[in-house]
Image (cartoon, rainbow, N blue to C red; front, side, top):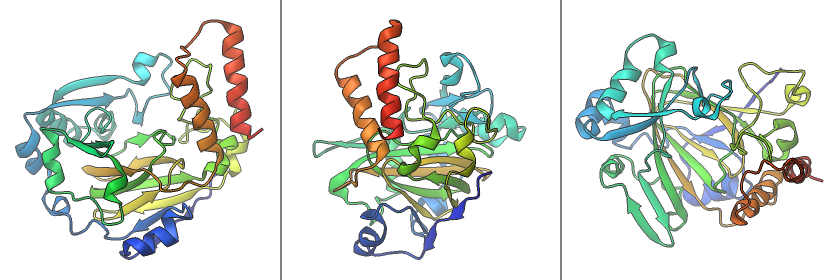
Length: 311
């Protein structure tokens, strides 16, 4: 049974203090009230956001359960299901009805980002980018290393599946409305977290096979005692998730909104997840497609398993 320990919860830090105490040693932390001065924490109600962006198209994730992606399903079309509507209708759907129904929908920035910075140039979504007028880049994020800003909207009960961010970035998560619980697992625990393997049928190689809400102890006996840390987020808090840490969120508030700021590390300590992700990136860059050749699949799986076990 998981026995999470609480991560540090500290008052607002100067950027140099944050870098020395948390970014450089790659330790997660909650900065209590670190986003409390953002206009979004005062303004972002469903009514305000509907007036601001309600007419804009909202592509969103939809699940048969509260889990996103829904890896309890058997077909990829059901695991990664998406729908589209207006933000006004999306907000209505997560605000009304039974909790289980409200948890079936989740908007995240991989459907539509707020801001991207590549090669020193920034691209702000021409419609949704207006939300950043209410959410400045946190002072602990070096703007020259900013990579992407995403928005998140949900009702209560959503579970984001246990995963790591495969972009190699640190993540500063600004909780603007609502509340969430986050469980975090250090990269050194990769061997106990059973990511979906290269060469397998599931392409979400950065996600764990473990259903954290219904752990199959017979398949994942090592998961029972894996060290785990917990963060409790309230509106106005900032959560720092170091690059390549596994994490999963439970959305608890009636209306949850976040903006995540991903930025590239200046230096990154070697760790098993980064090493494995380098293998996945090499396979992708080489253009090796998903193959039906069983020998090729076995080879890819063996390479991946060696990376997971740190061999």
